[in-house]
Image 1 (tube, rainbow, N blue to C red):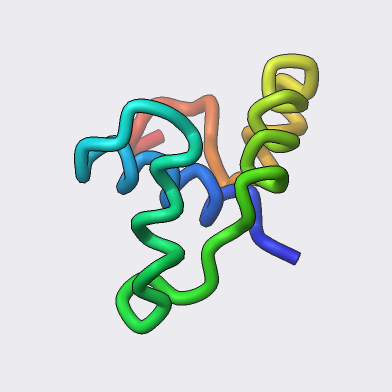
Image 2 (tube, helix red, strand yellow):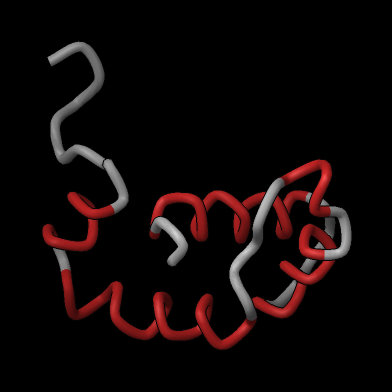
Length: 71
């Protein structure tokens, strides 16, 4: 099972490396020694599908906070 926060981190890294779609995460998957285990494309897609409907629960699962930094 992949942590939602790690999936989002991997997706952000894929975009930073030039990816233009969710499948760009495959670049990270090809180098497990660098980024560790990376979720499959279907797992990433499922997370992206449920995030908007989950709201605060999704943020909590990712370890995010709605409070400003320093609060």
